[in-house]
Length: 128
Image (tube, rainbow, N blue to C red):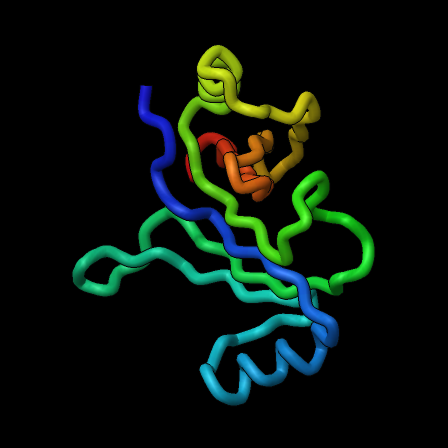
């Protein structure tokens, strides 16, 4: 079974997300959208679009979207078979969170690494 096949997204929190988004847009040219982030479309070696995107997003630090982690960031990794991977991680003694989500964006599950960082695992919908 393949495990991680790519990075689906990078999410981090900021004290002033609006100002930080503006900084990234102005100084690094990231096309920050009204929803608080950008979607980077994947390309092949010749620069032609291929199926897949990587999301980059800045959120507000209040709340606890990355709980139980105390980190200010979370990386989302693409996987092929979420259920099989979560079962394997549990069998290997990893701290896998019980909750999973399913939406039009795909299936999501979470594991906590040995440093306490919440890691999101994402199985995209078919065809993506």
